[in-house]
Length: 336
Image (cartoon, rainbow, N blue to C red; front, side):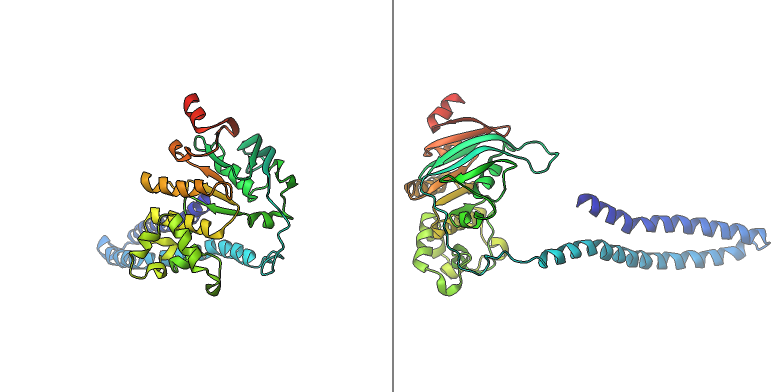
């Protein structure tokens, strides 16, 4: 995209300099010809001045027209891509009631999982084996680029492993059953998407207005430590958040995302840097609510602050796409 944008800018802007140079050369040649034909310099100057002034006025208009034309041509490819995407058929399960025949009662397992984004790109994960029991609270740590988020994307079924496989209670997760697997998961990313509507609708995201359970919305907001802030606003739960939550702070957006996950009442909660914008005290309260739900919830957390993972049953440290160590919070602290 950067290369395409650079080419469009270059193609759109370059004719101006070529035309200016060509114009100067032509005027110089015309001046030489007029003088050679016997016209004096005093007779040639008015003609040359008129041509130069006309070119000065005409050139910007021509350049603007050309730039607009190149932008249109450059945007046609994007438009074609969008039209192709819009023409795709929706998955067969959209709009239909689905029977969830996939149960999660025991274990999620990664079996010799390797992953890379392209055939020629380096491995992001390599031969990873990991077992997660129902009710576990597991923290993931490691340097940037070590594969933490990619591992969670594979566990969620968003990315198919390049090698190896993901199983839930012994059943392999693939395209045929991944939609059933999605229904078990509530995911809170670092940057939460918020629609330009009320807080109530954002917490109960995806449900129609008449299906929203307001008591559940309020309970989820209390667990996410944002209920008191919402109640202090004039419109309370009907407060409009703005496009992508523009009227809220980063911490408020993250807490609404966490409340949304609690509202969903899924069996698996995945937090990917979901408390990075919270102060320490608020983060502790949120983590307390999450830990107290352990047993009902299986919780997977990525965090850069090791203290965030203090109450986790075990912590997985990744390095260069492989598991470096697995242990309790205290064991990891002692080893590091």
